[in-house]
Amino acid sequence: MEPEYLIPLLPEGLVPWEILCQRAAKSRAELEGFLHELQVQGFPVLVEEEGAGLAWGTPAPHILLPRLKGKWGWPYRYLGTVTSTQDVLRAWADAPARALVVAERQTQGRGRRGRRWESPAGNLYFSLLLGPDVDDWLPLRAGVALAEVAQVGWLKWPNDLVAPDGRKLGGILVERSGGRILLGVGLNIDTAPLPMAAALGEFFPVHRAQLLADFLWVLEKWLGEETRVVRRAWKDRSLMLGQTVVVRCGEERIKGIAWDLGPRGELILHTAQGLRFVPAGDVQLSAAENNVEDPKVSEGEPQC
Ligand code: BTN
Image (cartoon, rainbow, N blue to C red):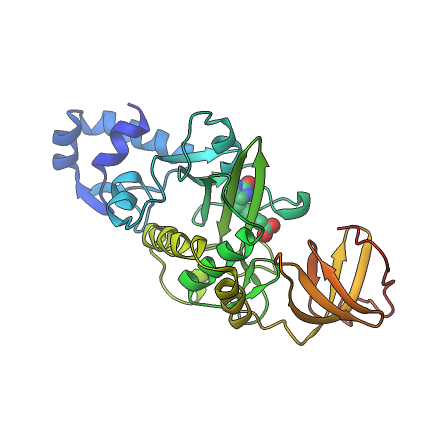
């Protein structure tokens, strides 16, 4: 029995076996076999003596779709274990703009700048297809939307969502494939997979499907906002402006005071050599912590 037939029969929480067997027109033994297969594929299926069902907050189509308020998130593919939701969306050749792919686990999740994104069960991993009509502010728009729905933490440029103590809660990856733009979002909900990571579930109980629906709704709003409004909102949610930071840009490390956002969403750094517009990179908040006493600040054309 394929997941697309069985999953819609499973509610959040447990449904008694008699009812489930009736709905699926299968014996309990047969169903237990199919449910076990779903678990192996990575779906959060509960199998208990009194019945079976889905974990609370599972973003299965019948739980997510009724919660969508806007135009984003349809058509929708909900999967167990994949390499990366970005790969699945890329391979979905006739997906229209606003299509959504969610997976429960990724074996080759990708982060920004070629890094790996650890993707154990219980978190949120999704990719959205955008049309070509997006501007340079897309990563910041998405970051503001994520921070708004997470309600915890602050934004580290360009769009890392970090807990109040600086541990990373989530991140955003924008990739281009032909004329298509793939927006990938990873948000730790149940599990912080690395020592410097945090999980939103540490702060309050999170219903993943509701949070995803809220994000899609809020993103729709932020995609339509003027850049000056996005810039203001990003600055309001960032604690790093005014702090001394080191930005890693490839091999280069640029030290300066995080000053502002430029006209294309770049980070403006106040360095010893003057203002520097950094279009991409990784921010480290404390120069001392990162053993950078006298980083080389290059002049001329930025490398990254
Ligand atoms: C970052 O480095 O901060 C960006 C992380 C983005 C991870 C998400 S998880 C869903 C989507 N699929 C991937 O392989 N990556 C993105």
